[in-house]
Image (tube, rainbow, N blue to C red; front, side):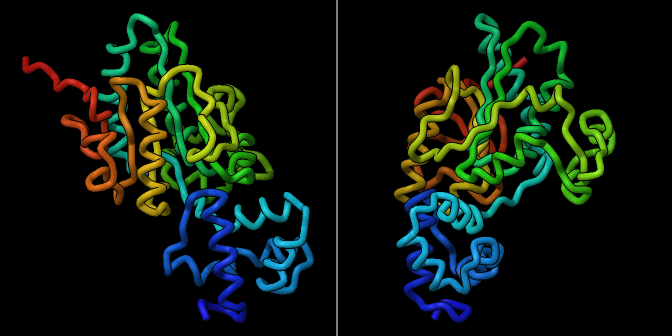
Length: 285
């Protein structure tokens, strides 16, 4: 038995549903959480246990039940300015390189893949807005996608609890970019307008980018993929990346032994670049 009172076959079916819909696999430390994660779904749909849930998934024509089940098994952990040093390096070096590279077309495209409830994309949008003079006259596209319809719905609204708003967000930015309401802290309309959120499966769907991505965030998502799925994901990321672009992975992720599509940046620790057209190193003064 894999945990709880459900049959082993129920767990296997649920794990298969997750992988087929999202490409993600469940590590042993997440398997035991399946029943706990799905309790709200079962209560909402009037289902007694995991075996009954699996039976309903097999026989039901309800897309809502399937979406709710997959959503509940996803890990939507995120917060504002996660790993501040990464955002500092992006602000000081990566964005400056992108401005130089794209000076003629005056356009920058940033894709947040696996954006969850949106804090990462809002962090980037705030950073760009605070560099306003540098981007005056530019077309700045910030796109956030995630396989979870629930997470994207929350991201579009931009409403966060007291715990979420204080997690990584400096007070000055909180006051400048969010309004306190009875339901929580709501992103100001000007900030929400800066980001395009949509439900996308990055392994299947081409992201809604109007031009190749100059900066791609794909943090702590590939951890949940098997190696073949990870390689497929890297190929998708490369297919939409601009020739001289940057890829941001999570602290526990790497390209070593995973793909030949990207290599570690020579200048920015924790960032990666297309292997075939690596960003040139800075010229010594």
